[in-house]
Amino acid sequence: MDDTAPARLARVTKRYGSVTALQSLDLTVQPGETLALLGPNGAGKTTAIRVLLGVISPDEGTATLFGRDPRVAANRRRVGAMLQVAGVPPMLTVAEHVRLFSSYYPHPLRTAETLALAGLTGLANRRYGDLSGGQKQRVAFALAICGDPDALILDEPTSALDVESRRALWEQIRSYVARGRSVLLTTHDLTEADTLADRVAVLLDGRIVAEGTGAEIKARAGGSIVRCSTGFDDARLRAIAGVDAISRDGTTTRIATHAPDAVVRALYVGDPTFTLLDVNETPLEEAFLAITRTEPALAAGERS
Amino acid sequence: MIAAVTVNETRSELTKLVRLPAYVIPTLAFPLGFYAFFGIVLNAGHGVASTPAATYLLATYGAFGVVGCALFGFGVSVAVERGQGWLLVKRASPMPPAAYFVAKTLTTMCFAAAVVALLGAFGAAFGGVHLSATQWATLAIALVAGSVPFAALGLAIGFLAGPNSAPAVVNLIYLPLSFLSGLWLPVEVLPAPVAHLAPFLPTYHLGQLALGIVAPGHGSAWGHAVVLAGWTLAAALVAAYGMKRDEGRAYG
Image (cartoon, rainbow over all chains, first blue to last red; front, side, top):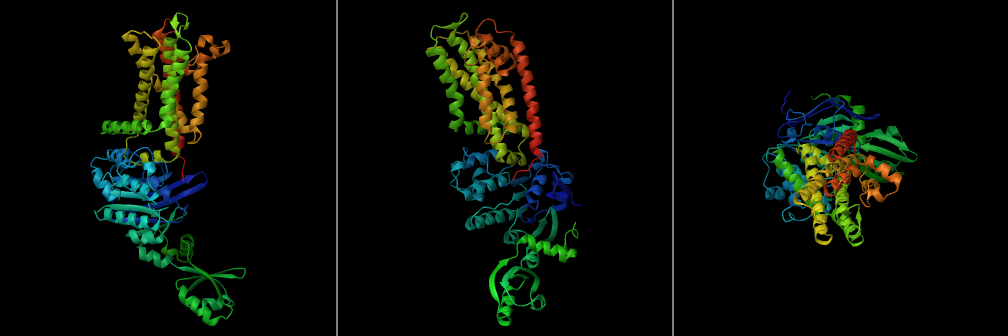
């Protein structure tokens, strides 16, 4: 085991009353790597981040940042964090916020540099309360990077952002990674995980259910659901190349597939009663539940 | 490094509050307005025993003022920062936790000093208040230091009350406590049951401590100080319990 990993959770279990948020979770961010923790809402991503940052204590297992206990404030000096919160004091200006957080770190960036990296140049003297949603999110990012930390921990950094702001923040995260730093970020967006991360770990019900490169995860999860009305029975549907699973709800048939175009084409050609309702990406949760059911060998645990 | 962070943190806290009319106006203008009205305009020529009203009420409205600074500065701001998650961001940062509390205490004491200075200047200029230099200094120190027990009480409220209910909770504690302790009207003129109840309230002891400096009587200063220290400890223990309870809770 490498004890100086930027961030590590070892067999961490965390319960809230009768709800188990994390179940013996193992997670390691390697130096220089960007790891995306991907999962639907309620999977335990935020809990994992909070245990890692030392703001909540695990019931079992240990969390470390560069080998040290994150519950001690001084041990967080090599890490910058971005959490999902609303309550940033509105009366202080952007520069005042950045200068205060910079003073927590031994070797912070210059304020102007932090503002430039976060895309906030020109907004230094604007009060936080007067910023737009996207600008507020960039302030949260600025507070994470102002200490020039070796590792960044970002909890859903782009949630609630419009497409343009999201792409801008992706660029800022990428340019930070280019400085040789490590990043752990959580997201419920497979595209975001694939775009930003070297490695993706899929969290479901407090457990890692799949791990791999973005492309690998995408190949396994990136299916579609074709909803339609068809006269074909299950056997005939299964015979169509690309069909992975079938379920029925009244007159509506749901076909899970990796080749939606081919499946739809085959049904139009072969089934005169066929009516297409819609085609959607498989919801992440469903995709990974399917993985864990059908391919237990691919589930977590192989990697340590 | 901790000292530097504390200084920065205090400057930020002061900046935040100075820019917040909802804090500045009640904490500075209310005590000053009440004192000007009851102490100077309405009671010119009156007094309690041999003490002129303007002098007597300078002590009690001074106490009223610093208690307000502490209860609102701590109670409301901690409840809001905790309830909206800002405290979580601070706790996830490398900020030494003590800096947060020390900064808020220093900020409260700065505002307390401002209230005392305002009231004192007003009383001296318009109320004919005459105190020796030692009395002025002792009164100022006692009142500013006297904000600390109420900072602890505010902290306890901040950790137990929700961000939306905190202002109401603070007012529900602050206003009756001030009235029943004789900070608005001398305890000598309050109905007997109230006067008997007053010694059980922390605000009474701060008021009497301040009165003892400007007028004869009002009990042992050390006695009042010990009671206030006891209240500080009790409130700090409740706050620590609230903080502990808060850490186990998940937001969002």
